Length: 145
Image 1 (cartoon, rainbow, N blue to C red):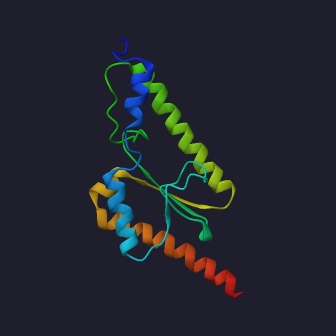
Image 2 (cartoon, one colour; image 1 turned 30 degrees about the vertical axis):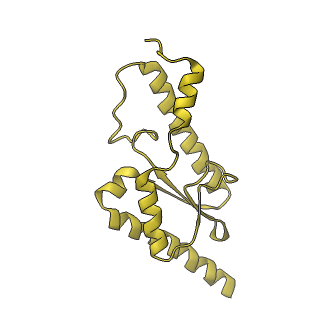
């Protein structure tokens, strides 16, 4: 089925979609309230991490179940399936490329699924804080040697 909008109209419409979700904002705010200091959506880091702490080489991505093709919750659109299958495949491949990029450079990467945050918000926040605190402790232990 052909799109009812021109390419320019569709591009303008898609460009208005916010890259930061309300859920991501709540999650980041909860981390901030627990004392975690970070930068949001750092454009000069590969993949534009949702949360980054360069000093400790930490990047955190909050992956939406839809755009990142959650194997549990993705509901594929029924129309234009070839387009959407290619889109989701490219998003998955890009996530793998970004993860490999940071892993190869000895960065600490954490991916948090949207459904993990929705299922148990407190647990998702606490797990992320534990992840960060372990890395910070290891960093400080190395600097004391």
